Amino acid sequence: MSDLTLTVDRLVVRTEAERQRLESAGHVAQVAFTLLAERLKGSPFERWGGARELVLDELEISELTLDDLLGSRGAERLADILYRRLLEALP
Image (tube, rainbow, N blue to C red; front, side):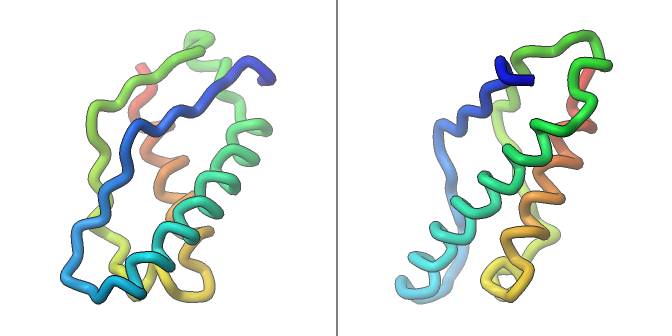
């Protein structure tokens, strides 16, 4: 799986929260993407047609509140959701 690349062009967090909490969300998102990369390394991604590139124009995650994201398991929960959504998007 060394040739699998995950590219995120833009990450948007829509919230009314104060700036300080939003800055924390950026760090949590970085951790979540690191966890996601680890999961993808061990995944059976190639079983589904040998996909090397999967393009999602937009992925909205509404089931995770900002409080959830900034909680003790926020990064893990975000990584779980992202992984599940990627698998669902496979052809």
